[in-house]
Every structure is written in structure tokens, then in C-alpha cells.
Image: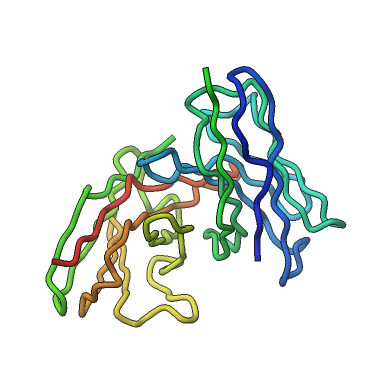
Length: 115
Length: 112
């Protein structure tokens, strides 16, 4: 099970940190990802991190502004979002990575960025 | 980054079969290795329905099948049922040295 938290209304230019608490599986065995969905639009992969934090990836739209991290001792994934823009408004999902796909998804947390 | 293009909408009557395509418009799907598919009901989280092009996770109906040829992957739903009405997304992992996933543009499936 994955439970996201931290989403809220925030002004453009500010920062926000999302969390994703994992349970029911060995968190430190798997890569993890953040995927977002803008209202009425499709899915966009935002960022991912390997089980040991050695490799991290970012979509071009967030590169240099967002930082993904994880705490395996706490079974928690994070997304530090800086310099937020109106276009970052979305529902943010965390998803467990398995090989080349994502097999477990959280219910999402909503981030709204106002101008 | 590459783009995965899907038809905006596909519809069918109960009992019919429909196929959703997923075409790589800038790079070959083959170089991305496997494609996965997700369905999403309104207001709900995405759910994995196919992985590694054609494999079904536990609990997914065998009415869902997948294939890939050249630059195009396909999801077929046979024996269409009302609960199949949802948005469907393909996804490919463009990994290697780059930790990167790409989602398709999404297809709205309507059961008439």
C-alpha cells in the first residue's frame, strides 16, 4: 500500500515536499516513482529513484526544480518541489517500480499552485 | 524525449472487441524494450493491466491482451463490458543510463 501526503494550495515560486508512506512490501527492494496528472489531462512521469538511491531521473519539465529522495528505514519516498509553477498543479501519485513497469499506485495527493 | 501516441477515443458495444494502439512517434518502441498498460477510472488511481507488452498481473481478466510490432504496441479488450469504460495509457521505460518513463497520450474507451 502507498499513501501520499503533503499536497496543498501554495503560491507560485514557493516550495513543497510530498511524502509517500509504503507498507506491505519490502520498500528497500524496489525503485519508486512519482507520476502526476494535470486536471483533465493525461499521466506524466515526474521522477524516479532506484532502491539504493544511486540513480535518479527527472522529466525535463521538473529537472533542476524537483528532487526525489527516499528513506528506506522509514519506508518513505519524498518529492521536494521548489520554484513551483502554476503548471505544476496536479494530482501527484507515487508508484512502486518493478522492472520496466509500475505495479502498485497510491491514491494521490493534490497540489494546487496559484499565481 | 520520445512521444507515445494513442487514439483519443475508442468505442464499442458490449461483447465486442476493441484495440488501442500506442505508436512511438520519435523513437522505436523496440529500443525501449517493454510496454506496459494502465487503466484509470474517473477520480481513481491508475491500475496496471498489462506489463512486458502482453503479460497480465494477477487478478486482471484474460479479456485483456497485448502485442507489439515495430513501433506500435497494442492493447485489445475482448468481450467488452461496461466496467471497461475508462481511460487507458501505454507506458514505456526509456531506461539504460537514463531513469526515464514515457506515458502515452491516453485513450478514452466508451462502452456504447
